[in-house]
Image 1 (cartoon, rainbow, N blue to C red):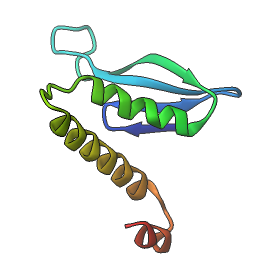
Image 2 (tube, rainbow, N blue to C red):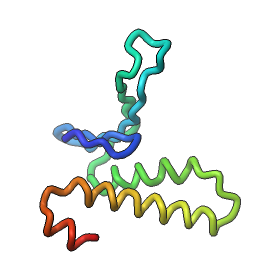
Image 3 (cartoon, rainbow, N blue to C red):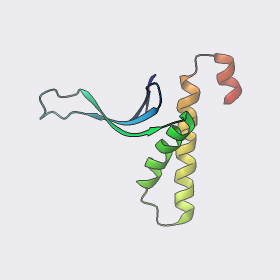
Image 4 (cartoon, one colour):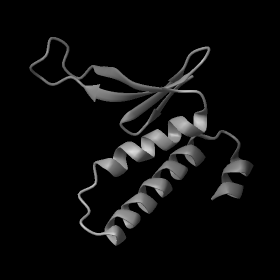
Length: 98
């Protein structure tokens, strides 16, 4: 498994689901424009890995009220749902989930 989810990458090994951050090397590096991956965390289930992606973006919030934070979280959830739906190959299933 090797799935890019926005600025994150979800991979797996025999025991874990791994969430990594995708970074593109800058023009001052030896290989500008090349994507690199930094492993963050390891999870036993796919759901816990996807929840981590949502948590990471929520923690970076600049919200000053609970209402702003909840709106941001709802937006992040809708974004992740969209990524999941768009990655499906079954057109009928896609339409059902929209």
